[in-house]
Length: 276
Image 1 (tube, rainbow, N blue to C red):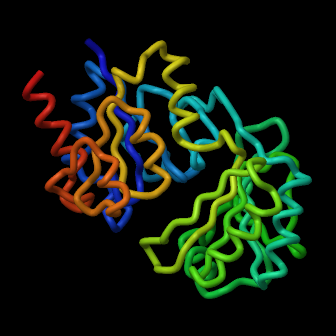
Image 2 (cartoon, rainbow, N blue to C red; image 1 turned 180 degrees about the vertical axis):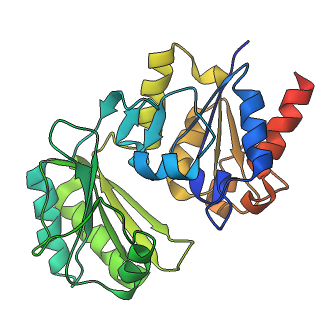
């Protein structure tokens, strides 16, 4: 019986240098001959294609924290957009804390991503932007404001700034917005991601399962971070890599002995292949 395997990317499937080993690629190729395999990530379509070179998910991809579901052929299955009005209000409130966000969205009536960044940047934001040098999606906006089709508003900074900002925004916007405050593992600091209330991985996975006519009983998920917890609660089998946060391990059915740098996901899948 066919199963579906959905994995997070950063610090789960990807190694810490953001690469995918040949061993992992070969294992995924074996899995996709008999089962479905895809990703659920905060990354964009552009970045997923870059990271998963030679790896072709054979089920819809969950992108940008769950705000967009698309096939490898760029067919959009679902979008969860923050309104322009709420997005601009979030920017306004953030200014009171001396911080300005990145805003990620889509071009009008297309799938091409927009990544707008502010003129005033803190050190954490400057570090993040180093990874996007020469990225055609990157655009300076002064003042920073929302585009028509906003997928998420993202703040990078210290916990001391972002934790009270999160509380402040929750008091103002309540359940009109989804709030994800998590540590940023690559360069230190924290990030606060603001989404449509149904723009998370668990809602997106439900949509994908409906689209391919599978059930949660057919689902195995892999992850390491805060934004993976809700999909862990949804899946029949939830698997945390060895380097996952303790909060994530507490929600997992299985905790792997191998980390992302030891190809933990592929090691699990290979063992499964041999057992089938």
